[in-house]
Every structure is written in structure tokens, then in C-alpha cells.
Image 1: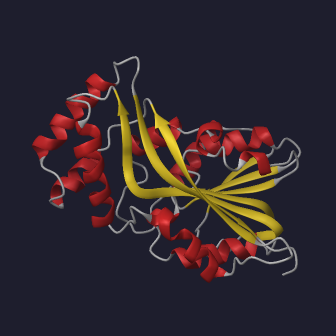
Image 2: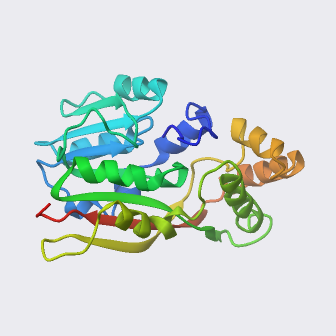
Length: 270
């Protein structure tokens, strides 16, 4: 997505390559059982649109709208994906001003809240546009980063013990929140999501993403920014990049990254 703290460049090809790697099956499995063929879905921070497109295939009688603050990324997604029930728009997670109250059955936000300077405000906007009985689903990091790696031997372990902690420090240094997943339940409650006899509730679960490809944590504009902030050195970036290049050649490779999934069910009587 386009980062609200203005710290990262959403059009950076290294970032869009990461987003293209994500699929709804692998990165939103916690939400999929709740989708119906006619669900109306809003994907906040849709980026180049891969996961958003996946959702459109799962709700053939419904509709899916992806929003992002970056016009360039929105144009890229709209040009790439042409499903009749899918559209992309420029939009702000804090306002969602183009949408009426109770417009969507499901709102999805993958790794969005971690980059917002006012997450409660965004939750309030989502609470407004989700229907009574609807769901706001989000996944964000727990703050632990990579918790396991294969092959579990040097030099590959440096990607877990050195590069991953440095990436978490970088996120915090630029104004993101590397452990947003831990705080989201509190943010959601403050925004109005509460338990009740009308079905309102919040479900929180730890999840793990098994990454076998994707991108090196430090490259391109992100690496230069991290170096400038003093989070990493150029020598570290080069060494980790070299290790990554060798790691992706290993047949049994994976990195296990920890996240927190939150499902906020809006009460039916609002």
C-alpha cells in the first residue's frame, strides 16, 4: 500500500514485487471461510492488486473494490486486472469518504495498520462503511519477524538473527509500528468494535507466513533509507543480499514470519 507515514516509497519496484508475491490463499486464509459468493469486499491498501484480484474470483456474484493512496499503483492494478466485479480507486484509509455507511460485507487490510500514524481513526472509518454483521479483517506483524529459517545453518541463519531484527528496527525508525498486530485489538475496541449479544466480537490469532521467494529485506530505496538512518551499514546490506541470493537457490528453503490476524465482527444492531 501507499504508506501513510510517508516514510516508504510505495511505487518502489522492490515493494511492488513483494506485493505480487502475496495471494489470498496464502496470506488471507483466516478470512476466506467467511466469504460468500455475493460478498461485497473493500480491500484497503490494495497495492498492485494481486490479492484483491484473488478476492474477486472468490465472490463471482459480489463485487470487490481495492483502494490505495498512490495513483500510480492504482493505475497499474486497474490495467492489469479486468474482472467485471473488480475495480480500483484512489482512497484514504482514514476517511473512506467515497463510500456510504454500511457499504461492504467485508473490509480487508493486509499489513496496513502497521504503517498508519492514526490506526484508531482508520478503524473508525472501516467501522462506518462495513455493514452490521460484517467483518473487518487485518493481518500485521507481531514484532518477532522471522522466527525460523531453512536451511537452518550459517550463513543463512543471519537472515533470521541479523537482517530480520534490523528490518524491525528500520520500520520503527521510519514511523511504522513493527508490532502493530499486538495492539490492534485495543485500537479496534477504541474505534467501536465490542462484544455483544448481537454478534459483535473480536477474534485474535497468531499466524505464520512461510516465505520461499519474494524479496530481500534491504534493497533499493529502502536500503538507502535504512543506511541513511544509521539502522544498517552498506556492508551489512551487501552481505545479507549475497546470503539471500544463495538462499533462494536452496530447494528446502523457507522463512517463517510471525503475524497477528484480527477479525472484527460488527454487531448486527448498530
